[in-house]
Figure 1 (cartoon, rainbow, N blue to C red):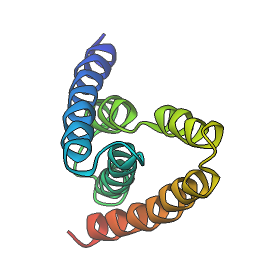
Figure 2: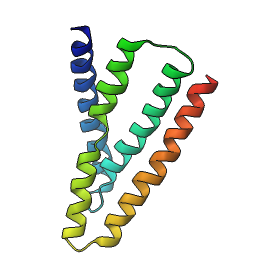
Figure 3: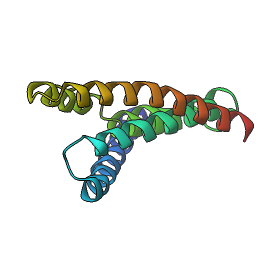
Figure 4: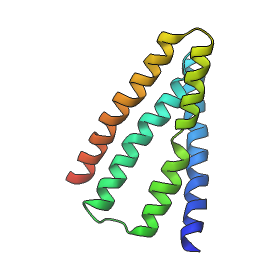
Length: 124
């Protein structure tokens, strides 16, 4: 029962954080490119890398916190399905270069930021 409560709390927090962060980014960048989703996905990669290192390497938090933060929060915070949907919208509207730019930026920078988060988590 604690596991499900952690998932619910983490998921709700992640969803709210995603909504507000993407909204702030879109407010400043506009919607011609999915910058809000890109920022959420990249920061989510960093946060997940950091939390993974703190959990797996530093043993700073246990299984309950891992469920709350890594599965609940990060699972709801990152928006990969929205990323695919928005990328498809770019392709369908003829903006193929923007679509592939979004794919490349999300995957390449996401991996780099995951590793940076992991490294920081290991040295803390």
